[in-house]
Length: 298
Image (cartoon, rainbow, N blue to C red; front, side, top):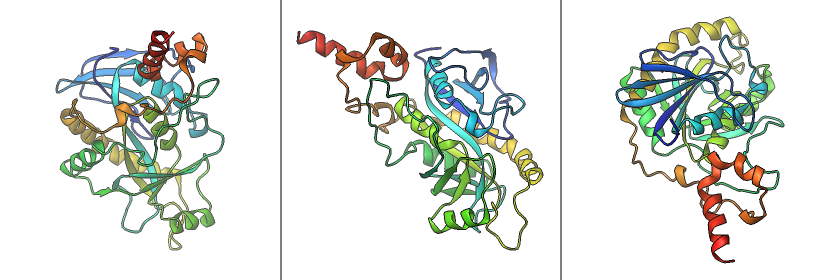
């Protein structure tokens, strides 16, 4: 699969499989960062190769704070993915975003603690641009496909990424609203940062399941209610993803797939061979060219 154009799909709470694919196979991968959440389901839809990964594993075994985000994104890169659609359950922080609505956010605020969210470090320093964390080509495409599928779509907004696994306190929920937060979830920030470093286009379908706990006239979040909405939204999510898969332009111009241009600060000649090997799938395009330039000047 390496080298082929693949659309990656990360299934969140309530979306654990991707039906309707041809030529289906399951692939288990090893990565330099350990094992991904589960095996990847590969299949074809309308001529597009898809790779599906259940974020929390089959049976929902892995909590948000335990996810091996690096392994998950690295696995997509190994399989040749150049774009990832992340489907996520979120709480709504706005009155007009009701449970069952879908948000395609364009910004993040980070409220996680201590999660690893970079492939770099350990002798290799890189700084990628993250001012606009989502792919500018995939965002309007995802919104359009959502509308065509019959979803109520909110285009743009800020995803507050909290640590979890507990839901917010009422004070926190009101604070996030005062910050301009649109939805709140526990997973997408690290996925987006790592996808950017891996030069993979990334977009989120944030499926609202509840109003968090900021509404004074409602009870706090109950997991049973969340799961009920998730079940109702699961086929909608699949429909939207299928529509995106059929219309992703392989020749799109967005900058995501050149995110590492000028980002690696470390002289490649000083990087240990073992680290170069670990970063081959992620940054080989720039590190190898840097090494060749270094060799040509000696």
